[in-house]
Image 1 (spheres, rainbow, N blue to C red):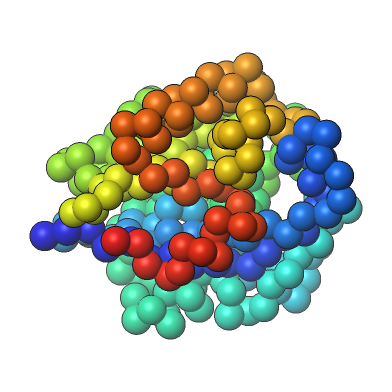
Image 2 (cartoon, helix red, strand yellow):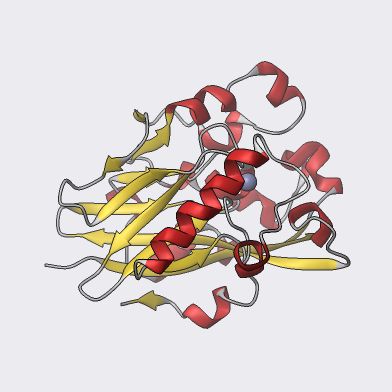
Length: 249
Ligand SMILES: [Zn+2]
């Protein structure tokens, strides 16, 4: 029995490239990915995209409204996407958040029976008053009272090594990436530890981050996984993402 990986695009965000790629100029449109993982032992979703409300009202972004233009329709929201794929959102067992920025956890609300799988330092940071006051995090995006499984480092989601959380702290205090192995390929969903292919190839980090030195070390880890044969899926790469289609094998 193998793992099935399907890709969903939960809208797009537009912002200044320089924020995500130091020295970059102009605007960039960022795909907002969510990944459906169907394993013989259960269903997981890795990152949940933008909150459905953002399709018609961006006020929940507070000060981040000034940084991002939202390009989203109601059908882009996670719940609608799952229904189109004939997957009942209530049947999802695990929601794995790479981290708790608004464009990675906005669809958590759509998965009422899922256990949240998140790194402990990320959960802690997401509830810190000073970070909430600065609009870095908003528990209204990610905390809907589901059970929470707090991780401290690596975690094997289904116990057979096919779906593994790996800590990639740096972009945020407790960022994690996801390694998924199919019959033929090992994929690494980098999320925001590596926005673009160019981030890795040119070693250009964003102009902001929790610990950019740690993030630079993570890029070395990703290079090692790539050298060992893994395929890296970058976090918001507008060139790579559309080439991937809707399913990975
Ligand atoms: Zn982020």
